Image 1 (tube, rainbow, N blue to C red):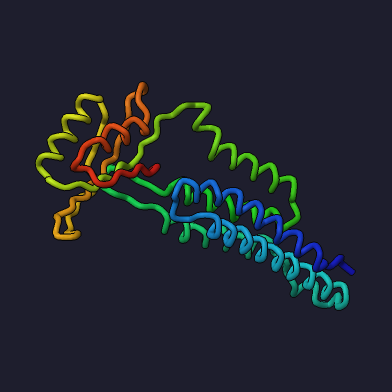
Image 2 (tube, rainbow, N blue to C red; image 1 turned 30 degrees about the vertical axis):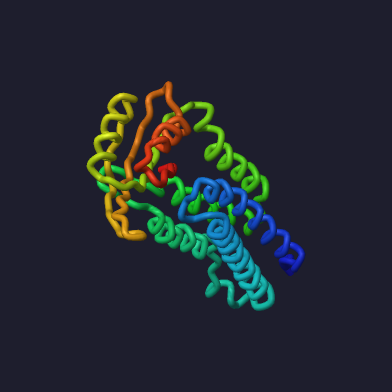
Amino acid sequence: MTKEITIYAVIFKILLSIIVGGLIGIEREYKNRPAGMRTHILVSVGATIIALIQITIAQSATEAVIDYPSLASATTIDQSRLIAQIVSGIGFLGAGTIIVNRKSITGLTTAASLWVGAALGIAIGMGYYNIAIVGCVAVLVSLTLVHKILRVNTLKKLEIKYVHRQETKEFLVDYFKSKKIDAEIVNFNASFEQNYRIYSKTYNINLPKNMTYTEVIEDLSSHENIMKLSIVSV
């Protein structure tokens, strides 16, 4: 007889997949990404469950062959079949997090983290704990430390809400030019709030090395026409 998966083993694997998926998801949620902690946990746990089902199916087939040898020629065991469906299925979920806007593409890192979360879930479900733990550490290092070590100046979105369109527009153009900030308008809209026409403009901005995003917020917030500022990582 083959060794069955105990309820304790199932609970351990599910809990481990929650921890692994949650750790990756927390980092994504901290950066306001569309797929946060809950999404990554669900992906990791789902992959673990399917991997456990695949193992159980394989064990049941093996037991059937042992009990009824005549079924050996008619029974095939392919432990990669269900797992392959996880890999292809997660692609559709990842595609939903990718946003293409003119010259910018956002969501690629989140899509990749979902895919990796599924892979880690498979590793846990199949019992490859060393692979899962080392893989989780590698992913967290890639998402949190590599950027700081390499000091890559990533593109960010600057969202501005303001009044008095022409006057504020001239101020922003002059400010970006004087500070040598590369700014590209990616979205613009207007609305009425409390009898005022409020304008909202979103820029893709890239700062020179000697400047920080905190300085930009402080400089722009001093202008009386600007009502709200926010910066989001791309």
